Length: 298
Picture 1 (cartoon, rainbow, N blue to C red):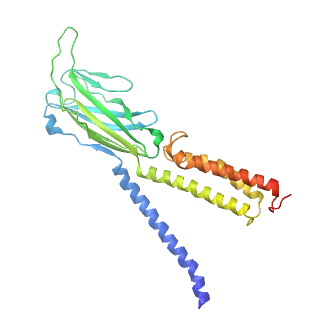
Picture 2 (cartoon, rainbow, N blue to C red; picture 1 turned 135 degrees about the vertical axis):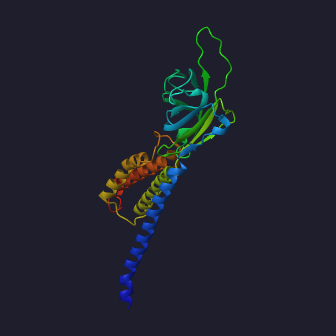
Picture 3 (cartoon, helix red, strand yellow; picture 1 turned 90 degrees about the vertical axis):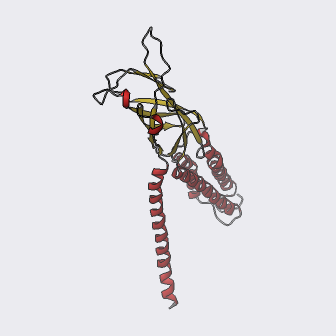
């Protein structure tokens, strides 16, 4: 009876572990799907405040590079009311768009009788330190407004042109949040864009850091047993420790969207793990040279 119970125990443990793994697998996939919606930015247009005579702007965040410090936003325009020609597609009057762009053109002209072509604005990230990875946060600002085009020799008026802005976007590995700034007005759009690392990116980065510390701690235990005389030095130890020493940089670079070496995550785990592995390898080599594989002095 006892032998039957012992033979079934590994099977029961295996089934439990399999169920735990299946549950974790399903949870991660579900979390990924929900995160895709949570990390996507969406700002709804306020058409009532803009009125009937307005320019509808549909914006999409194309890319965000926190290392370069810019966000690329694609803007598409649709005239409404008095700004729309009788044909229902073209612009009824000449307009100029002024957009605060870090690179490229800041003024875009739209001619009467022509379709309003989309543009790409490069928005500068003015706050945030990417070397705080994976806990870095960044802020950018999208600002633009329309004015009537004024020909040379003419005096421009102070006419305001209302806009209704819809902004959306999703960038892999980042969580985007958008909201109207305090300075926002119907005729002058100012939108704050907040950027953080996605939850899955933070989780995987923290997992990598914990794995580095766990492996480093295991190496310390191995070296302690060698110096305590509980374990003989084997040639395979040198291969194992040397492989870890060169594998950790690759493991570190596998973190999603990680900047070059020198980030907060490196100071939390990578640098220390490399130092521990390197010193452990050196200690085992010196021990082997002085006392030999058996631990006895030569």
